[in-house]
Image (cartoon, rainbow, N blue to C red; front, side, top):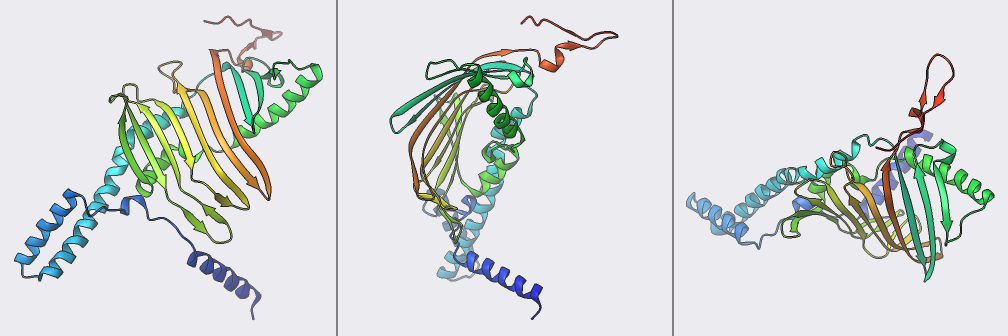
Amino acid sequence: MNRSFSLRAIFFLLVWLGLAGCSIPTPGYRKVDPTTPAFREATARLSELLRAKGLTGDEADRRALEEITRQTVAFQKEGRGRQVRPLVRALEAFEAELGCWAYTVTTRVRTDGKLATTVETFDASKPESEIWTLVSRDGKPPDESGQSEYRDKKLRRWKKSLTRSKPRHMDPERMEHEAIFADFKMSGENAGQATRYSFSRGRTSIPVLGTVTSSRVTYLLDNASGQLVNVTTMTGPDSMLFGIKAVHYDTTVDYVSIEPELPPFIAKTSARYHFIAFGKDHGDVERETVYSDYRRVKCYEQRFNVRVGTPEVQDYLPD
């Protein structure tokens, strides 16, 4: 037997076995509720027309049900893309160039009742090695060695984070896809001043890889400004994927408008999670990070004037 053929055969057999056992939710736009008054009325009206054309009662009812279902699915698919356009515009705003900023980050992490607090600052006007500064851990400032170690680790992690792609739920190009395939709902909030967009997915089970339970992502938009106010993500209990079990995982991000012409900035992130990874229980964790004292600064590389002669550092005076 040809070896390459054998490998291909084994591969397709594994894929077939995997797909045969998959449990994938029905796309949201295909879910039709035939019990609503509007659906019943449309079905009854079409059934009457078909009977007038000579179809038997049962055949007319069957065809009417199929046709109204088809029309409803097509209407939902087309309409959902139109409904999420304000959300798409709000997410596209995050592609704007922000310039350089300085701010303070205060993080509180509670693990099984034990609280740890970290205060740090970010300042884009400083050289790369000093862009992050540890102010304190649990109220105690670091010594020189601790500050140096912190900056080395923080800089590496920060640079790595810059290379990652944006989260799927913040990608404007995916919004129409999500509106079509997830269970999508819109609702008014705060007496019509805001709109909430909700995208829910049911349980998905994939053999070998694991199970992802239900999940929901919601966005709150201010109707007057069109800006994002809040994003919340939630997963159902007992998701298991690649040997990692998520007992629960919920996150919330609050945004604040700093300058009207710019997208909103993060004001606070909150997370509650409990993971069991390869037999080790990491316990309940609550994490809150507050971003404060936002202020514009001159980018470090723009603080130098290159002329004929010696470059000089310019003092920066805030506006």
